[in-house]
Length: 230
Image 1: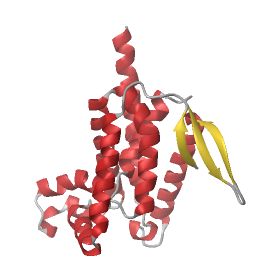
Image 2 (image 1 turned 180 degrees about the horizontal axis):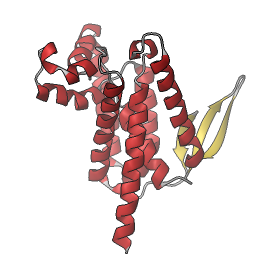
Image 3 (image 1 turned 180 degrees about the vertical axis):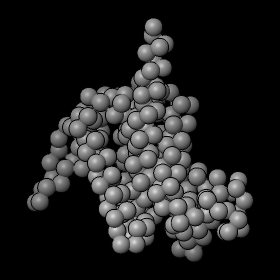
């Protein structure tokens, strides 16, 4: 299912969302400019679980490894990977930024990506394959959206066998379904013969962890707003 837009408009201009879209697009253009450069960027700035747990084995300092929790969010594995993340960011990011404000949105976005990478690392601690992309960040936004705007209707493009249809699907239906797919694929990755992300090719548990982080963040925001109104 491909989300296209939500019914309501953002309460403020989504400046941070636009900046992130621009930065991710520029980052990928630089990455794709040269296959050799792109590979080097992924190796150096991607997030590697084994390197996170034992930096010295890879000639990295602890600080250098921690920075890859951020730099890995700026890289993507291809146009499809980038386009999917930008679409979800554009659809859901503006709405959330309008709810929580620019500064908190930026902090939640980065923290969601970090949570996703850590979730992936704890599920596959010996993996030496770099994890890249903003999928953990996007998953966190989906979790926040589900808590803050569960009844918001999302115009969604749904592929069928011979055609496509457009439906308005409530977040309370679309997002749990999305999360269920991520969890199922993550579980299948764990059950695979090798038991590593090399089999799946996608850091499913980064999606799961990011989404769970978003749910928790959304609940805390609701509690804060409730206490503020009292």
